[in-house]
Image (cartoon, rainbow, N blue to C red; front, side, top):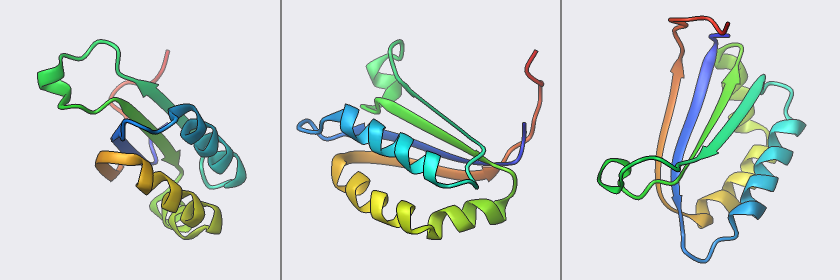
Length: 105
């Protein structure tokens, strides 16, 4: 699946209960039909000097950029973003049309 991707890489603040944020994010994507897939993971293998403190990555897939734009304006996203932004210490965010170089087997 190619489409349009929304990639977020974060380092959470020390006092954040990450499980609550993850639960909120899973609820968010279940409420918005424009999100076609959602994946997340926590770094377990990266060397500190390479990951620069970032610990979690989140990837959402949309059919097209317009679906992503609708997601950004969705009331559930606006509400969750306010909570999410207070929980993060550092963030990298990339939004891009993806190029499928190798299809899943």
